[in-house]
Structures are given as C-alpha cells and as structure tokens.
Image: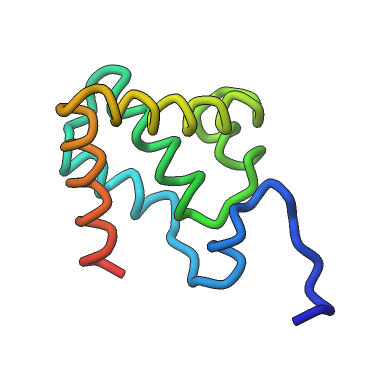
Length: 102
C-alpha cells in the first residue's frame, strides 16, 4: 500500500473504501430532504466530500463553487447538525439511504 500516493483532497476513508457516484449521493439526498434550498445543497456537498471519493475540485465543479468552499461547507454543515435537530435528522436520513444502496 505504500506505493499508492495519497491525495490530500480526498478523505482517507475514501481511499480505502469503494466509491459512490455523485449521482447516487444526489439521488439519496433528494429522496431524503427534497431538492429545494440550502439544506439540500449543503448536505449534498458534504456527503460527496465525505463519502463520494472525489477530489474537492470535482465536487466544486459540480456545484459551481471552489474547492475550498467544498471543505468549508462540509465542516459547517457538521457544526450546524450539532446545533439543529432538523439538519441532523436530514443528514442522518440521507446517510442511511446511501448505506442501504451500497
């Protein structure tokens, strides 16, 4: 495994686990929380970042933001989920849909 070069923009877990397509992530989030407003977008960015196995730049291009914004959005969503029960519930529901489908 030492011959594999790590990419610092992909969470370490994704370097070991199978990758989800961005389409699967988006579909799970749409079914969990709908397609309207900021929660859908933030949850989609976060789940693509944490579980999609994509580079920040790829995610950013899909959502029309820079790679730094992907990282910041993901971190802020986790912080928001600790303070807001609705956000946590929506995030958990989308995660469960992803787990069931993989």
